[in-house]
Amino acid sequence: MEIEAINRRVIGLDIHQAQITACALVEDERGGLRKEHRQFGAFKRDRRALADWCAAIDPAEIVMESTGIYWKSPYAALEKVGIRAKVVNARHVKNVPGRKTDIGDAEWLAMLSRAGLLRGSFVPEADHRELRLVSRQRQKLVGILASEKNRLHKVLTDSGIRLGVVVSDLHGQSARAMVKAFIEGKPPEEVIQLASRRLKASRDEMMDALHGELTPTHRFVLDELMQHIEDIEERIRRFDQKLLEGLSGAGDALMVLQTIPGVDLIGAAMLLVEIGTDMSVWENEERLSSWVGICPGNNESAGKRKSGRMRKGNPYVRRLLCEFAHAASRTESTFKAKFQGLLVRRGRKRAIVAIAHKLLRTIFFMLKRGQHYRDTTVNYEEMSVKRNAARWIKKLTEFGFLPKPA
Image (tube, rainbow, N blue to C red):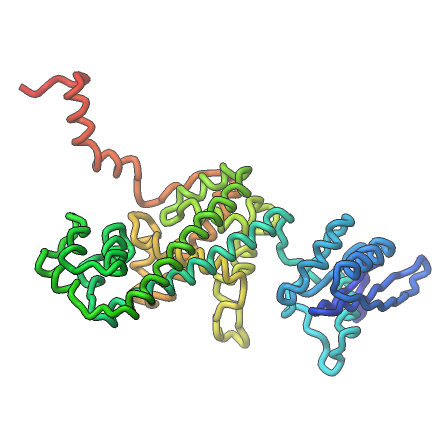
């Protein structure tokens, strides 16, 4: 069986860190096929030369593998000359065994493109690609911050101070003030004066927890850790500001996402820069779930269902969705009911992934229709009335809108 040519002029690009190998397949009017191989470097002048060469050929399609981050700068160079290349998943274009060379890879990509067998991955617009740098670096900073906070807790424990036993959050306002007092060398009798009155622990329990053997070395390490923690927190605030400024035109989408249980403003912003605001680029919610890598895999043979392990997708979106799922599982919503139903049968981790999948499907339809979240099992207006009715009636009576009881 012969493969029919769909595209008459195509270019395949095999991209590496320091070299780009290109193969152009051009069919003339008589049906003859001409191959042209070129190699380019990876510097700016080389990428400009690549873009000019591709523009001169005027192909119907240009394809490249999504290899690490190396595809991004050539893609941007082509975009500047008005060419939207197609970035394809490497696992979809595996070459024939025994023919693995850079030139062979580029030619294989061009052949598959000529036959119309390749589907491009989702690549957002240039402004959202830049915001991805902000969002992903923020996630890294949050991970570093958590690590530093845990380290500070370990140093306190090493010194015999058990502050984490009597406070729920070691980095709350009063707990942080007490740690800073220890760093300054104040005794426990003065440090305890900084404790909040809302702490449930008694004064005797607090005094027992604050007594330890804090050496000058402990104070030095605690001081460095505290300065690093506050510096990272300030950096995260600046990243948040930059991210929200970049999404100033997507205010409606941000508001829609925040109506979902478990989704806050920053989480919604980080999700939008990854999946975009236009859901028409996805065929359906299943395609989006597959791209993220949050849905079960398909692996069936001879009527037997084999491993349904999820494939590698977008780890940044998957991490956000799992965070949303953890939060949503603790709210009064349909997600909580589904989580509790799956928890017993499938375990906590699988239940969280299932909730994350359900959340993504919900987000797809909300953004596509521009509608706020409506829970199928919980009436939030009724819940709000039950929670606040007594206070509302009291105030209405106080200001004369309702008659006072006899």
